Amino acid sequence: MTADKNKAAKEKAPKEKKARPKYVNLPQAKAILDEEKRLKAVPSDFSFTEHAPLKKGDFVSEDLYMEWKAALFDHRAVSLTSRANELRTEAAHQRKFGDPSTKSKFKRYAKLAEKMKELEAELKAAGVQVEG
Image: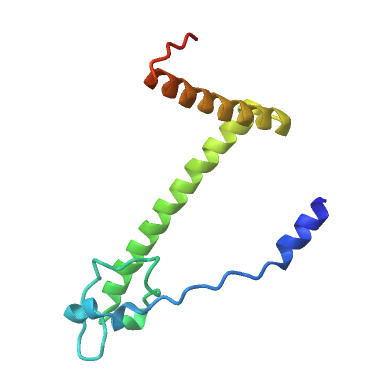
């Protein structure tokens, strides 16, 4: 059965990447563009996820490109730090529960506990006194 799942996962077509527009071609960039369509300042509204990456030739001078590159690294650092924190949390969780069967039992327990809280709240709202 797991072989079928692995085979199906491999057969899935890869997701198509959405084309990201070049920032220098957008209307909001006109204020900081020179005659040759090169940036005279580091854009403040640039989105690393929505726009195509800027290149050295998109800037009037190399120092502006370096400033933008520094902002790019800051953006990546935030993302990497966030992912590192997620992995630390997951590692602590693994240390706490150990084997997969204990982990799955705890997941079931957590779901049931959440449902019990919801039912208790509904009963209290209906005027039923719940002891527990």
